[in-house]
Length: 372
Ligand SMILES: *[C@@H]1O[C@H](CO)[C@@H](O)[C@H](O)[C@H]1NC(C)=O
Ligand SMILES: *[C@@H]1O[C@H](CO)[C@@H](O)[C@H](O)[C@H]1NC(C)=O
Ligand SMILES: *[C@@H]1O[C@H](CO)[C@@H](O)[C@H](O)[C@H]1NC(C)=O
Ligand SMILES: *[C@@H]1O[C@H](CO)[C@@H](O)[C@H](O)[C@H]1NC(C)=O
Ligand SMILES: *[C@@H]1O[C@H](CO)[C@@H](O)[C@H](O)[C@H]1NC(C)=O
Ligand SMILES: *[C@@H]1O[C@H](CO)[C@@H](O)[C@H](O)[C@H]1NC(C)=O
Ligand SMILES: *[C@@H]1O[C@H](CO)[C@@H](O)[C@H](O)[C@H]1NC(C)=O
Ligand SMILES: *[C@@H]1O[C@H](CO)[C@@H](O)[C@H](O)[C@H]1NC(C)=O
Picture 1 (cartoon, rainbow, N blue to C red):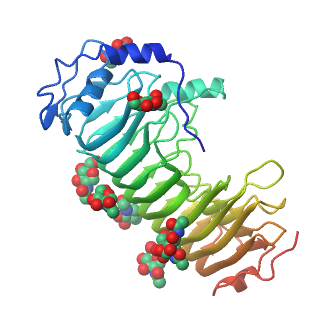
Picture 2: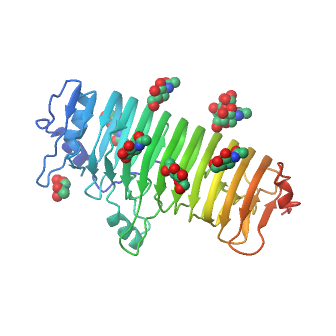
Picture 3: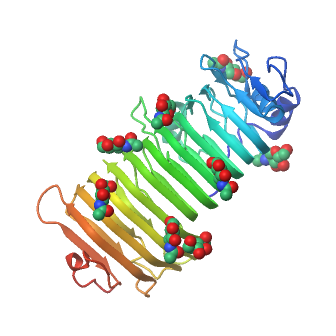
């Protein structure tokens, strides 16, 4: 994973937009609380939004206000900020938002609209198109994002890069397309080289990963994911993924349920995936309800240790309800399956595994794992 940014707008344009930041509509600059109102009539509200966030400790965007964000927002290095928001629209296709610093709260019941439709259609024509992530927390510490909605992100909704102690609570994500080109890669949350991230009490309806994590000490609880690709995808590219717990997750119409994915073969990175627990999943019409995949064909440089798939119930679309595919060179150890209660849409459930001796009270469902 990496920080994907949109370069359609040149840096000089960005600087000049910031240099001419009008502050006259930012009320009470320099005071504790500032209120933003839209400039209106086709104008870009990004500069005044940035100015307010830098100048005021609380920025209020009233419920009746819709801001037009047309230039990239670099909001890094903030300290002790509260953004109380907001109906909020990314109106044009060249936007992204980086938020960073210490002690930042984003809340207020508003909606961040990524205006993704144009991106879904353009991406269908050109798959090399770089699309903007809706919100990137970059080097952010002690952040709380709660009680907001985010819709139609061009690509990932949320990206936490090198963050520490970041909480998302009661966030609703929805990506939908009005054309035949569906939302693509609209992951709910991606984290990279971050530590202590909580994602709780949220509802996600999207076209890609619900939450994909490449970080340490991650707690995910009480999520409903519909139409998602998976929960828990670990790249293992020279990285450590350790201490991840996902509890009480509902997944429906998804490609993968509880998943650990690793890349194997020549030229891929190395890493360690350790102490991962999936506990209490209820799945409906999921292609692969329980899966460790893409390690079985080649030796992997990623070690996978101490994994628990506990209390996972529901239905798969095909006959295979669980597959634990480990690398042939013994790179998996201590993989546990407990209380699996999974059924296919029809016929007999298949539990498959490769290159591992499974532990736990559901291990017998898998029988002796194949050696590849
Ligand atoms: C948003 O701002 C851009 C740049 O000023 C402008 O081209 C566009 O028309 C504005 N959109 C709306 C809905 O006001
Ligand atoms: C954001 O702004 C900070 C401070 O001005 C600067 O150091 C940093 O390079 C900027 N980041 C990006 C991605 O432009
Ligand atoms: C973590 O962030 C939360 C805000 O979400 C804050 O209340 C808490 O004090 C922070 N924890 C630490 C250890 O700083
Ligand atoms: C969750 O956030 C929504 C706004 O998106 C709000 O209306 C609702 O009251 C919040 N729920 C809780 C339990 O705070
Ligand atoms: C998820 O869906 C279940 C079953 O429909 C419901 O009981 C639960 O409250 C939902 N959770 C959230 C966070 O919306
Ligand atoms: C994982 O959790 C254990 C137990 O809390 C802790 O000792 C260890 O440092 C954590 N690992 C990382 C990489 O944070
Ligand atoms: C495993 O990770 C969880 C957090 O996800 C942590 O609470 C627990 O202490 C860790 N266990 C070990 C043995 O590190
Ligand atoms: C299993 O998961 C379900 C759904 O999250 C939960 O209601 C139940 O308490 C869990 N049971 C155990 C034994 O953990």
